[in-house]
Image (cartoon, rainbow, N blue to C red; front, side, top):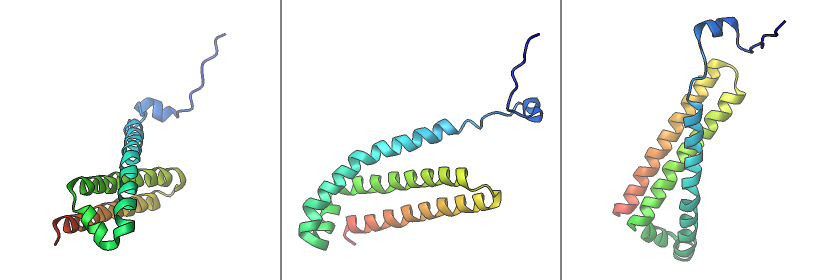
Length: 132
């Protein structure tokens, strides 16, 4: 007699052919890419902050952020950091919240809050960069 391997999938799942949603690899890659981007950008921002803002105060910060390179790195840090935050919180919510309506509500709140912070941060940085 030959033994058949028992699958953990239900008979209905096997009949429908349902499998992976195929979004896990993309999500994993975006998390790792955003983390890799944040490393050098964070180092640049900390060094620039220590050199200009600690000594110069508010006027040093404004002068530093009016540089195109500093403004670009700050914007990149803001957007990559918020993308990394949203992805990480999505994983936590998916893993630990089992009520579907609560899960969807929390995911909406997280995505909306991150988009709102990206908008406000980008507008603030633009205002400082342009000297308005």
